[in-house]
Image 1 (cartoon, rainbow, N blue to C red):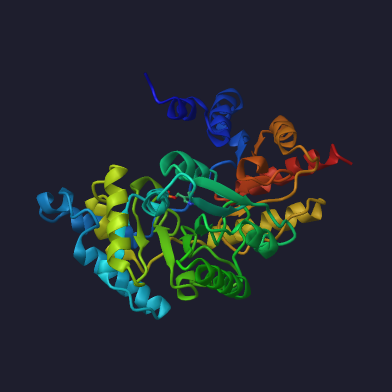
Image 2 (cartoon, rainbow, N blue to C red):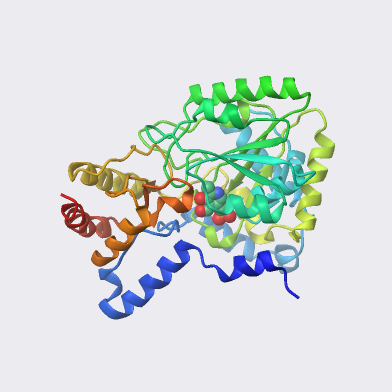
Amino acid sequence: MLNQTVLALGKKRSTIREIFEYGNRRAAEVGRENIFDFSLGNPNVPAPDAVRQAILDIAGQDPVAVHGYTSAQGAPACRKAIADNLNVRFGTHYTADQLYLTVGAAASISICFKALTETPDDEFIVFAPFFPEYTVFIEQGAGAKCVIVPPQPKDFQIDFAALEERLNEHTKAVVINSPNNPCGVVYSDETIARLAGLLNSKSAEYGRPIYLISDEPYREIVYDGRPAPFIARAYPHTLVCYSYSKSLSLPGERIGYVLVPDVPGFDDLYAAICGAGRVLGYVCAPSLFQQVAARCAGETADLSVYAENRKLLFEGLIAMGYSCVKPDGAFYLFPRTLEPDDRAFCERAKKYDLLLVPGTDFGAPGHMRISYCVQTDTIRRALPLFEKLAAEYK
Ligand code: PLP
């Protein structure tokens, strides 16, 4: 009749979706301005002017070309512009032929999982806390196994002993997401170097490469003047999965890419990425936004509001006695909940119309995710409510 696995997935709403709908119901009762919805990772700053200008310019061109199909991997000129931009920024030597344009990072990572999976015994290692869709893409999308490394809550850098225990001959790839959703950690140069060293030695031991899938939609959202290390430079067998959803504030336009490394066996690896795109039904990335991305690859939205929000929220919560690792990137805070049961804590927060996501959903119980891509005034007005909530536990 129906595929029972996907039926169950379709019926089970994600916690974030539940919270979103709860927020809509409450907004109808008490007014939208009285709901403090910190659940969604939807950028709240506008796309840069350059994007608007590019859309206008491109829309004035031949509509057949603007809106037509492109080759599956993306228009060559757009791929070249994006490769050139990467080379200028990171001192690399990528070519257009290494890029495969996608409908956002979600597509990029699912394509990589599909391309690398040979048998149901294949394993992908992810680090908690992680983007919850990883398990769906790995297990249901690719039919492989998702192996979880528990969180290291003191700083959310990699727990190498736990990683080493999980690496074995079935490991196809290790998945990292730095800057991270939901905890905001940016892996240090030291962490990246140690990871590269470990993967090199394990690859040598197994006689084949273990890939690194670097999911980096938040690459440009970093604080205190510290850029995120460009991971692909440290480990050659890295598949970079990127999107313009966050850097250009274009999440609904669905545009991103997979950057395929120029390693031995490149032709087959790139062909497998193209094949996985076919299997998953991705015909080509949106033509108009391929061109927008090509023109605006060096731009970012004005991200200063995130820095302001991070400071206000982080310092405010710490002063109230919450404990939280200071995030170096992305636009989330991931404090500990004030009781071990994070679901119960987030339920209790609803009393103050604070909408928070339990850490359990990200593989890290005892935490809550607070998305601070909201108006700064929302944070200002929410802080006294966080204080009242904390007072309940004193
Ligand atoms: N990976 C992570 C870690 C994310 O947080 C998100 C979206 O929030 C995605 C992937 C999917 O991004 P996109 O909108 O580009 O598909």
